[in-house]
Every structure is written in structure tokens, then in C-alpha cells.
Length: 345
Image (tube, rainbow, N blue to C red; front, side, top):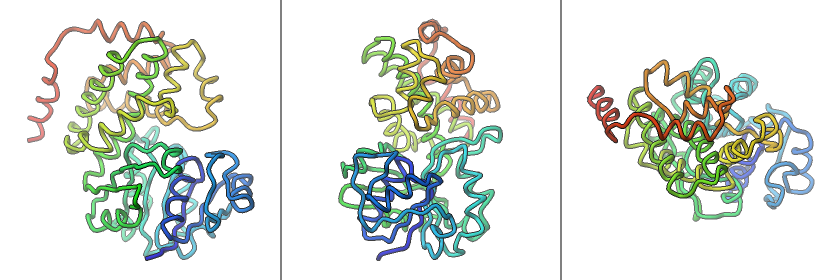
């Protein structure tokens, strides 16, 4: 059944999701704060700034008016960067149809409050819409999605019926969605993997090989798992698409903005220069601050995330950070996590 869908955010992933939904037969209108993006989508059926090489469906409409984007929407999908999610949701809230399902597709942790995007949405949305809130996460590069390459994601919602509704809404013959009710695990896994990707990029930029990257991915998965278990999420989520799936993708591909940040830092470039050259948000930079603070608050040892924080914000030399990680005291591979699991059983 075709639905009217309002999409907030026409960056790379917002554009790719809008394309998918429009091609899936839905009536999609995407909101952008950038006038050039709105004009390009409506006039040329291309986004002139993001995914510029991708032809968009003629039925996909863009607007700079957030009220117009949300008017009559049965589903609202938010795909704006994490640092402007609260501001955007505040702008959108007066125009959200009361019966709309709200879908968050942003990965990140709010600075200061240390809230996941789910917690930000739950704080700002009225009660009826909190019950119809879902979150999409998983290994999804926007360009590959826009090119209709087979992709699988996780839809998380506290209400299983909502998760299943969104699952049916977004699934196609090349985009497969699975469901879970572990919202916290999906949100944390999808956010924290970006920090580990910066570390993996540093390793690659220093000329280290596959052994090094595999070690970082595996131990990164371990320290994320420790944190999510301590915070009350389901460890099994880390074995799924929003966990190891997203982590492996983001740490292994040149399409990853977060991996690129690490790679360029290891080449001796300054963070400000790297971020300017990207032209897009690398969520892992801000998330590294949040990971540092969460690890302290929860008293969880997260050495890779801490090393990334030191490289980004304390001018730590990437090579020194790697060798300090290797020189840490020897220990059991799973002891800390076993103790954490015991604490929550």
C-alpha cells in the first residue's frame, strides 16, 4: 500500500532512503535546509551535493518547508546528523501528524546529555508517537543502497508491531529488513562502531596490514559489547547487523567517512583539515567524545575508544597510540565481559 512519507534530511543517506521509498511506490517528499539541493532534486532529479552521480525518481519531490514535508505524512523518516537532531525535531514537532509513524535513521549520541537518538526522540515526541517510534540501523553505505546493491538492516522498536510495519514499508527485492526490540543495543552499536572505524583507518594509514585491522575490529566489538551490556542492552544484538555487521563494513571500506578520518590523521593531516575536505559529517568524531564520557560514567575499560579520543582531542600521535595499545598488560580475552554478563543475570 502506497503511503505519504516525509523525509527530514537530504544528505547522502537521506537521499538514498528517499530514492528507495519512492521506487517502492510511496509518495515521498524530502526536506532539506539547502536551497540548491531542493532545486536540483526538483529540476534535474539529482542531488547536486550528495550522491551527485545517482539519478532520482521523477516522483521524488524536495522542499525547504518542513511543514510541507510533513503535511499528511503517514510516516516521517529523520535522517539528519546527530548534532542537529534535537533542533530539527523541535522544528518538526508542531507539524507532525498525530497518527504518523516516526522512523529515526541517524546514528549517534547527543553531546552533553549522552543520550542516544532514541532517547532524544522519546524525550521530545508526545506519548502516542513514542509508541510508534522505530530506528533503522545496520551496514548501509548510501551510494551502494542508491545503486540498488543488496543490503540488509535492522529495524528496532520497543513495540514489535511498529517494527514489523516499518519492516514491510522499507523492504524491497534488494533491501531486506530484520526486526528487534533491543532499541538500546541497536542505537549504541550503530554509534560506537564509528569510533572503532577511526582506529581502523589509522591502522591502515600507518601501513599496517590485515592482522592489525582484524585485531582492532575484534577488540573493538569486545569493548562495545562490554558497554552495552553494562547499560542493559542485549549482547546478542552485537552479533547482528547493527553490531558486527555495521562494524566490519565501516572499518573495512574506503567509502567510510570515519575510516577516512583515521587514515588521514595517520598520514599527518590535522583533524580540522580532514573534516573540511570530507564535506560531510563523520559521526565518529563527536561520538568519540561521548564514548569517552560513557566509559567513565559506566566504569567500563574501552582502550581503543580512549586511544581515538586522545588522537582526536589531545594530539596523540597515531603510531604511539597503537603501540601503547599493544603494550597493555596481558589479560583474559573474555574475562571483563563474562563479569559484566554475570552482573546482569
